[in-house]
Each structure stands twice: as C-alpha cells, then as structure tokens.
Length: 404
Ligand code: FAD
Ligand code: PHB
Image (tube, rainbow, N blue to C red; front, side, top):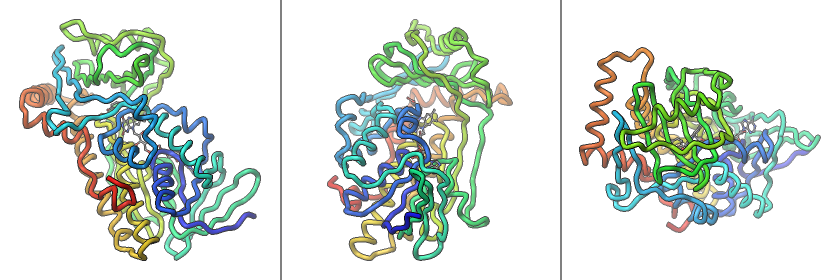
C-alpha cells in the first residue's frame, strides 16, 4: 500500500480540479489530482462553450491562455429571437467593453492538463475506488487504487471537484447540508455539426414549439440545441428529424437559419438547478458542479467552477503563506453569494425562453412580453448583458497570487 502526505488532495480533473491544481502550483502549494475517467474521456466530453470575461482574464493571468488567445472566438453581442425576428443585445456596448469568448470546455481542459503535466505534479487518470474520510479531523484521507496499487494519502485539505455525480458531497454526514433543487420539465437535445456558423453571434430562440439555441465551436463547427421532453431517448431522433425541428424553430422572417451539415455528435442533457450549502464540511471543500448545478441556458456552470476555485485558492494561499484561516472559514459564504446570483439568472433565462408543458396561454403571453421588454429597454438589456458577461468576482486575482 502506497501511503504518503500531500498538502491538498483534489478529487476530479474537470475544469474545477485542474484550475485549482494550477492556481495552487503557482503559489507553490502541493496537490495531487485523482480522476476516475481516462484522459481521452475527460478531454472528449462535449460540454460548455461560453467563457465569461472574468474566466478569460483568469486563464490568461494564470498563463494558460495561449490556446484561448489563438482559437477563442470573442463575441461582443448575442441575439434573442422570438415571433420570427432576431434582436441583438450589444454586450460590449452595455458593459463598458466586456465580452464573452466561445472556446470549448474540451479545449480548456486539454490546455489545463498540458499545463499540469508540464509542472510534473501528480495527476492520476483512471483511478478506481476513490474515497475520502476523516473529513472533520486535522488530516483527512484520500484513498484510491491506481496502477494496480492501493493508495492512502493524508492531506491537510481535500477539494471535492468531482462534479454532480461524484463521491465527495455524499461523504458529508447526513443533516449537514441543506439542498435546494428544481428539476425542469424538459431537456436539451444538442448536436455538433460540420457546418460553418451562419451567424457570428449566438442566437437564443423562443418559439411556439419550444426553445432553441444556435452556438458554435469554430469557424467550421456549429453547436445547436433544442428543448425536448425530459428523458427523451436520443434514438427517437434521426438526423433528418433533428434538422427539420432545428430549422422550424430557428428560421426567422428575414430568412436567417443555421447552415445544415453532417451531425458529428448528439446527446440529451437534463436540466436542473441545485445548490448544496454550505460548500464545506471540516477540511473538505466542494467546488464547481459538486456543490451546484445550473441549467445551461445562462452558460454559467464552468464559469462558476472557475470563480469557486479562485476563492478557494485565495484561502489556501493565505493559510500556507501566513497561517490565516479566516478566508477558509468564509469560503462557502463568499462563493454562495455569486452562485445564487448565477442561479437566479440561469433560472430566469430558462423560464423566459422555454415552453413549459403545463404552461397556460397566460404564461406564453407573459414570456413574449418579457422578451419584448428585454429587447426594447436599455435597462433590461443592460441587466442581461452584465450578468451574461459575468458579474465581478468577489475576490481579486492578486489575493490568489496572480497579477490582475
Ligand atoms: P465536471 O466537469 O463534472 O468535472 C468533474 C470531474 O470529476 C470529472 O472529470 C469526473 O469524471 C470526475 N469524477 C467524478 N467522480 C469521480 C470520482 N469518484 N473520483 C474521481 N473523479 C471523479 N457551463 C458554462 O459555463 N457555459 C456553457 O456554455 C455551458 N454549457 C453546457 C452545456 C451542456 C450540454 C452541459 C452538460 C453543461 C454545460 N455547462 C456550461 C456546464 C459545465 O460543463 C459544468 O458546469 C462544468 O463542467 C463544471 O466543472 P466541474 O469541474 O465542477 O465538474
Ligand atoms: C454552447 O455553446 O455549448 C452553449 C452556449 C450557450 C449556452 C449553453 C451552451 O447557454
């Protein structure tokens, strides 16, 4: 049995775990990252695409922004489409020059894995039987099997960055966490298509037949979604049926529609709002999807993972460099303030843009009025814009050991 000690044990090599590992590395803090999937699986998983201005700035300040700089697509606006017309919201003009960047989560994760590998600090893929224990002691334990050996690692702290279905949140004793949850009566069917994006910016559509979203990954690949019933089997949708539905919902009166191409990936994603509070138990800190989930309509999930770990890195830096623990104590409260604002925004985007199966004619008219107001009032557009590009982080980059 391999037994040893590490400062911070990190469970999960998604965006939260990898970002945290690198932030700690930049502050000279040792960590071990344990991931139960393979490197290829983690990189190939198709997920988020929209990075807030603050997430872009963070990746750049961490020195892992080269790929982003080269291949990221900066968008200074987005479109909201309803009743057959597209309306542009000028994100940059309304926020003093802030924007979002479209850069696949796959690429973010690949860049971070490369950066981790270059540090030679440990990152174990395909770990089995990962577990955490002794969380309320002064030395929590991370156990796993890797390369045919059993490992038992004693840590100062453990970061649960293992996503919604991970093992860290369930390791917290019953009764400690309060769970706030909402499950929506629909899911998203998403595709990647080999087709040049027909719009330079995203288009969020509210249609009588339900929500649809036009996005992209590169100048050659379009990313599209539409609302389907929850648990819809993907086998129910032939490629031809997907295109018919996409075009029906997205085509506007001026003839705009997505370009059609070969479908290279398709999947169905359930929609959920979820918060477990506090995001800490003893010496275990939860970050990212392990503590909270937002429906993807606001494009906030990956960005929240990034802001959580910035707050955690600041607290761990203060502990290791100055022996201060008050920022560790405040971690959950600081994160949850931002998390709840992103929850509210994601819920609002979701409720305004989807058809609810039990929705009344009243709701439909109210949603149309909401969208009419949104696209004609500068105040309403400004509110959307400042939230979409990302509310300010509550902690400075400098406090986490980076130069702003
Ligand atoms: P994860 O990415 O889930 O990473 C957790 C890691 O832990 C995984 O690699 C997992 O394999 C590993 N793990 C799990 N269990 C164990 C275990 N027992 N032991 C070891 N490792 C374990 N967000 C946005 O910001 N913008 C968007 O545009 C956006 N679009 C989305 C579209 C879709 C279709 C989906 C599904 C999500 C989208 N999101 C978006 C959300 C975003 O993908 C997530 O919020 C983000 O991946 C969270 O990162 P994380 O590191 O917290 O969790
Ligand atoms: C994406 O490009 O995958 C994407 C964009 C915006 C969202 C969700 C997903 O709100």
